[in-house]
Image 1 (tube, rainbow, N blue to C red):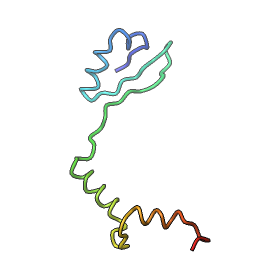
Image 2 (cartoon, rainbow, N blue to C red; image 1 turned 60 degrees about the vertical axis):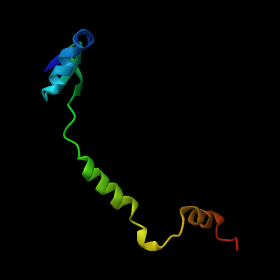
Image 3 (cartoon, rainbow, N blue to C red; image 1 turned 90 degrees about the vertical axis):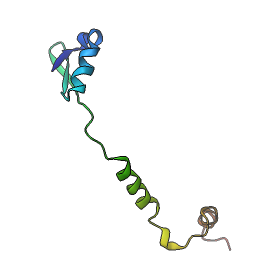
Image 4 (cartoon, rainbow, N blue to C red; image 1 turned 180 degrees about the horizontal axis):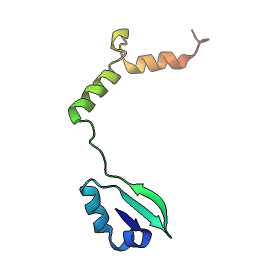
Length: 82
C-alpha cells in the first residue's frame, strides 16, 4: 500500500488497517518515498524471554558471591587500598 503524507493525516485508519492485515505501507512526499511502515513481526514468547533473562542474570552464579553490595564495595576500593 502507498499513502502520501497528506493522506496519512486524513486516512490514518487506512494505515492502521493495512498494518493489521500485515501489509507494509510506503509513505510518500511529492512522489518520493520517505519511508516504509511495517507491521511488527512475531516476537519471542514470554516464556522464552524469561528463560533468556534467567540464563543471562545467572551467568556468574558459580562465583560464590555472598552479596552484591559487598562485591561492589570490593570492586570500588581500587588496587591500592588495603
